[in-house]
Image 1: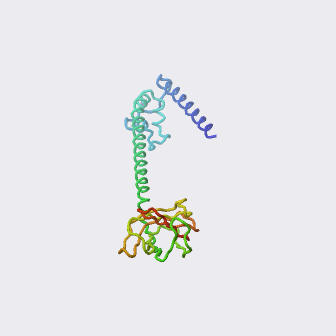
Image 2: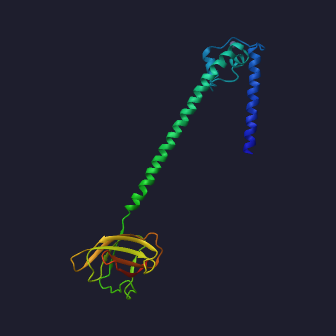
Image 3: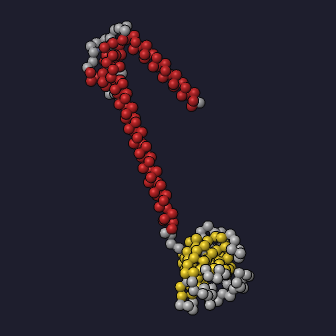
Length: 233
Ligand SMILES: [Zn+2]
C-alpha cells in the first residue's frame, strides 16, 4: 500500500514536472501573453525560493508564469536557492548526526557508570560464627547449626573454628560439598591474635535462589576444604 502510494506520488511528480517543463518551453518561446509590467528582482527572488509570503493570487505570479523575461530570470535564480536548500538540509543532517553521536556517548558513559554504581551497593554485613564448628576434613560435615545468609551482596565476617591456622583463606558458596556448582567465591587473609582467627569477604549472592547450599573455607597452604551447611533465604 505504502509502496503503491509512493509510486503514485512519484508518477504525479513526474507528470507535474513534465507539464511545468512544457509550460516553460511555451512561455520561453513567446507563446503566451503576460499581463501587466515585470515585477522587481526582489519579488522574483522571493518567488524563486518559494517564499510563503507570496500569495498565488498575486497578479505578479501570473505575470511571471507567462512572461519569457521573468521566466528566464526565475530559472536562473532557482538553482542558487535549491543548492542553498540542499546545503541547509545537509547542515541539518550533520547537526542530527552530531546529536545522535552525543546521545550515544552520553548513554555509553551512563552505561559504563552503572556497574560502578552497582559495585558501590553497600554489602550487608553478616557474621558467621564457626568457632564451635567441628568438621571432618573434605568429608561429611558433622551436624552443626546451619549458617543462614540472605540472597544479597553480603560482607561476611567468618569466625574460624578454634585451632584454625592464620594465613590466606578462600571462601566459596557451592551447591554441594564437592565444590561443584560454584555460586560465589572470594579470598582474604585471616586476621587474629593467633588464638582466634577471622576472615572478612564480600560474597555476591544476589543471583542465588533460596535453598540449601554449602559454605566452604580453604586454607591456601594445606588446600583442605571445610564445608558447612548454608541456608540462603
Ligand atoms: Zn515579466
